[in-house]
Picture 1 (cartoon, rainbow, N blue to C red):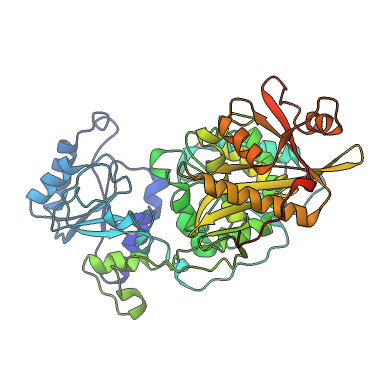
Picture 2: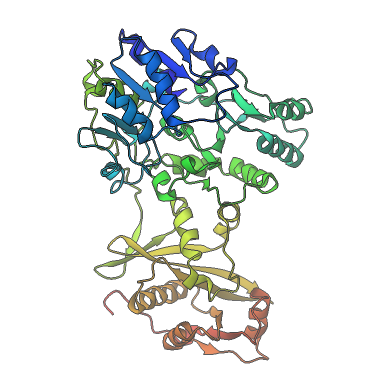
Length: 535
């Protein structure tokens, strides 16, 4: 589809475009009927694919045409293929997003975003000096509809669009639909589930089977563009591919997952698009677990929408024209002429309320855009070692907790010169008509110093004292954790008596922390020396 969008732009500017494909497949060729199409193989001779043989077959066709550029978009074809084409005098443009192999080409296009520091260094040592590199989201290929300023409609029902791209096994989606319907109230007609059936998808009959059982499931078929469906979408669920750019252009909330290596992204890079909810290939994509999360996101959609609006990258829809211009096409619009711009990024202020502790230390409340950093920090080995639950928490389970139970506690992040150092939280609970503070902290970096931890704990004790001056702190500390045992003793915590009210409260709140493995401690407000920023 991205080659189709590119071909249309060339055609609109008066160029003649031809497609070279493996074989005739109606699901594909029906979309390119307006272009010359050549087929290189029959079913009988494609099984033993060879780059050298493929290049030879391509040259047989190219040599009969008047060709300005050969544009290749195929993971099977590498420098071996390109060397043969280039040696025969053809200029080549290559689409790639893996950055893991050398190329011999005049132009390489990779719209993948890998952060401000890395994106524009990609392919430096993988392409010849003559090669122009078109890198970053400024060169993502989208349908022309995404160029205009679009306002999302406000449908009366909650529409959830499901897509894993043009191909793939739809069994996953069909099982997910079954689980979603099973969890929904049968009388609830306020939502609609829209599974997209791509032209090369397998097991599409399973989608129609589950759709036949409930009218709230409405399959999307024969769609050459999802734009008309996107603008009525409340939440997108599916594989991360070109959808990343389409969803970003329209600010649509999404929960995505990677089904193949080329869909893998560093989560912080996705966050630059305002996209915070993503599961990687190494995480279990389980329909039984995904379905409850989707319904939770429906209830919290206003929060997910606000996260999307934190995007620092603007997808303007002009990537196709920039590529055509780089390949020798025309471009008259000033807005589109800067084809080699490094980024369309535009920082949006988060308007965070900071509490200044020292000249370089400050603390603020945790917000939804901290969701992934919070989990990644919690899952650091040095943090898990001393936790009651020492297991790695999956991103899927974390997302469920974040949008349901996270608000039961007050969480903060301490930063040094605007770089997060540790997360710290506290919660007020009651046991037998008495109130207690419980809490915890974990570092964001292995270089978090003792002084920073002390500053965070002093602030927390002062802050909770100002809220509830007579409330006692209780906690458990692993006996083998000498660092925190000494730290808490330094802060004024002391062991509790085995017959005390605090002891039984600790047993209630920390039921999996045995006295054999953990020290039970308390901090009495009467021992607190109230600190200030000048201490």
